[in-house]
Image 1 (cartoon, rainbow, N blue to C red):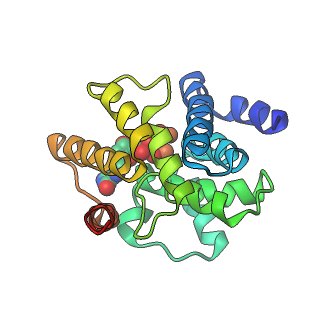
Image 2: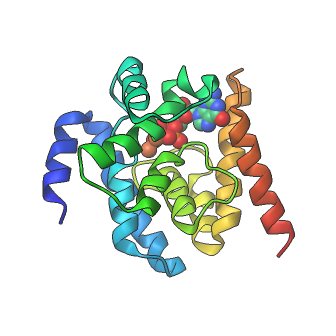
Amino acid sequence: MYEEIIEDLKTRLSSKRFAHTLGVARAAVALAERYGEDPEEAYLAGLLHDCAKEIPLSQMQQLVDKSGLTIDVDMYVNGALLHGVSGAILARSRYGVTNPHILEAIRYHTTGRVGMTPLDMIIFLADYIEETRDFPGVAELRQIAFKDLEAGVLAGYDNTIRHLLDQGLSIYFKTILGRNDIVRRIKSR
Ligand code: DGI
Ligand code: FE
Ligand code: FE
């Protein structure tokens, strides 16, 4: 299924990124099945989540400019953050995706957002735990992800933020807002 999209992604992505992409699609299906969400939406969002990851920043910015979206400057100048938004734009224009749940999950897969949907959380987490990922703590993260979706997302956020701190990098403000929202949701249940 989605063979044309897969063939196209193969020509646009490095072999490592392509393997990661297939891994995210598979992990997303597994999480969707676990949490009673639509596995087809999860698969397609997983396949396309990084479709803009390897285009130059200037092209990501062009996609955003043409789309008419207004993006804050912190995101606009950073491809690590902007590839989600530009990926959602490409998913619509190049791959014909119109389902807003899928487009939003692609858009927010790096930073999350306040009020993440189940599909947002599934893609955010699948990105972390897919089979080709190998970092200290990934086994524990996989366990948490299948036990408790929100706790998994929080662990993912914490891992990313720790990594950014260790590298002396800035933390995008919406990443913090997204994490705070998950903490709030876990506390209030
Ligand atoms: O695209 P992937 O590599 O599969 O994963 P991703 O979309 O989660 O992107 C990870 C990159 O984004 C990684 O280089 C760290 C960076 N990143 C994630 N959250 C933030 C961030 N960078 C900044 N500056 N601030 C953030 O909050
Ligand atoms: Fe990404
Ligand atoms: Fe990814």
